[in-house]
Length: 504
Ligand code: ATP
Ligand code: MG
Ligand code: MG
Ligand code: MG
Image: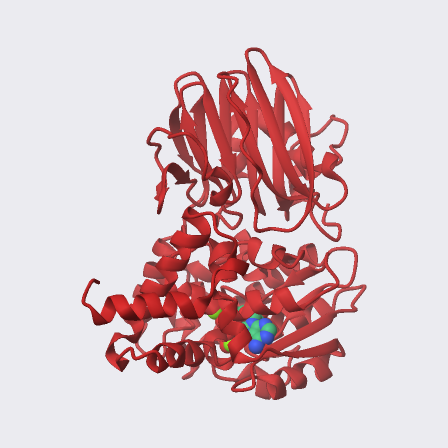
């Protein structure tokens, strides 16, 4: 049920036998808040839902179990076939709970979606991410108490949790991030937890004739775009590169085909001309947003606050998008992106050798988890819901598994995607070389200049960026500061002084 926005985009949930004091619901995401309370046996569930107007669609109850869902499903029709003879569940939350009744934790192996979920059952707290962990989920578990939230900062004041089989969050002792494609099954009385993997990227590669591969990619992507487009007019964040242009073109070819597109740039760099070619071709209502580089850099704290990511490279990709989302206005848009296509296709890999290409794909698929590149919070800070068709479970499974020679072919990167989209985009777009979002928007160069102007030597810039981003993380995530109060320039000065004095 993909309406304009999912019923809920985030939550803070507390399952307690200890009767402790509730946490304050602190989120970067905008959204209305509704509090849901349930008692099951000797445990209480208290959930604050970040919702978009119909919070009841975000939870379901049956047989003493409550399910809370932030996000949405993309294979609903297929899932309903598993529930014959039952009253058809209305919401995605009800579908997942009905499947949980049948399959227990294995229900999450069936889902293609963008979600974080919690099931509160007698004595149990079950926490699940989608295959890509694209809606981050954090947990703090201790005997008698399981606290979970879609933003780590909401667990900042959680009393110490015990170790669980998940990644600790920097600066928040006892808080862990549920891995991508994982269900954690927590015994509430003891706080002990078992983990089940529900998805892993394929290590195998498939060979296919060119046309068959291109056709399979085209069909998978078409479906992924269609199920994400929603009921209103979707908005595609468009660079004019092949990834976002493909999403925009396929969105515009749906039955109810109207779409809006928007491109961002700075006074220093933009891809406006390239995006315009695409917008004109597909007939979208197109907008250009110029964000001064100085304003862009002021959004660094907001980007780290939203993504809860301590990795400088990733933050540099996400900064221009966050700045754009904050500028969009008209909250409540459903935003489609071309984000993430380069990971399974090795698009960042600018050379011709196949072993190196597949090595890069394997490495990136092994290391994406926990970086929060796909988090919906980036757009939620502006009140929007974003979704990424290239990381649809079926699209991703297909793209990862294609043999490297289909990804790099006839001297082109992302060949199979370009071939898949040849019929829907002008030739110049189909063959346009890859340009990273951090490059085309002048983000990387502006950030570099901010540091060199502050006196950082050229060969220390990368290190200084890493320090700035980590410092920002410590302030706005672990430290609980609001990003409006954090001045990028002051953090740069601090880091520069530390570097100069050799402290780090
Ligand atoms: P390519 O990777 O071939 O350059 P692309 O530009 O679509 O294609 P990225 O550069 O990887 O993809 O950027 C990731 C995504 O971020 C894009 O697919 C698009 O949705 C969004 N994006 C990138 N640059 C801009 C921009 N200048 N304005 C709006 N959205 C952008
Ligand atoms: Mg790309
Ligand atoms: Mg990319
Ligand atoms: Mg690009």
